[in-house]
Length: 271
Image 1 (cartoon, rainbow, N blue to C red):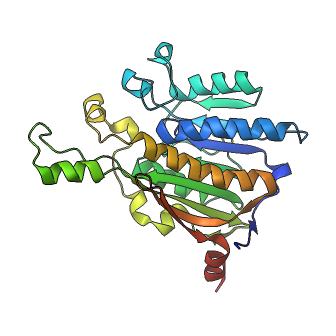
Image 2: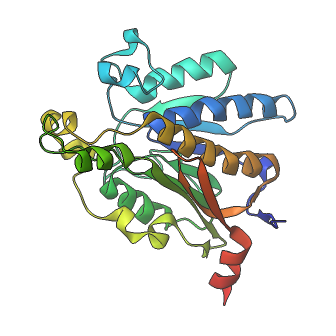
Image 3: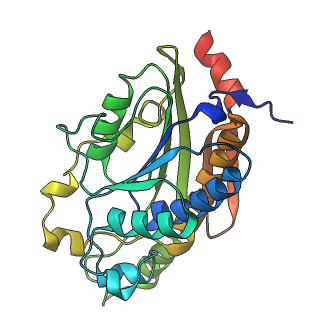
């Protein structure tokens, strides 16, 4: 049996920041709102939730993300914050901008004791978040990442090997939990576990509309499995302040999942 590791006092948690509310992030938000709604009946208060995303809803998002036709052209974070705050009576607000190096933690209401969930597919954004969260004495950082479908340069002319590669791509992912407590890193941050997650690329603010339109798509089931993995962590974290897993790997097509115990990784760090 896995030994739970207590990392926060859930009754004193004041804020949760969700960075990226597209595919995976939108699914996380739906379940997080339900979880907080249930906890609200048991507690005197629930943490504030801030949705961080500068992206705009497009028609192509309607298939895989939680948006409606009337949302097209509006900011993703603003749309979902208003919708879920009204539906569940929860303190959910939006920061309708992308993270940049100039963004301060004060702008995001991220402070010591916060829980930050990153559902982004951009290495530069991850690096910025890593650098800023590393300044805090006490924070829980959860990062969800997954592969995208590998699109060939000329999809109209696929041989059977290219077709097989296309069918097999975009199913893998991982979720990593990092913890800083009393000014010390007690569980390595996601970027320390997988440095390639923070490889420099263009920030969303630096990418043209043309480049965005041809970016590799992600699979619905992969996003759903990533969100479910994040929610497994958030459920124990918000219920009793503990975590069981430091990192979890999954493959959505086969329904495969493997996790590394948090307590074992913490022992390694302390040596």
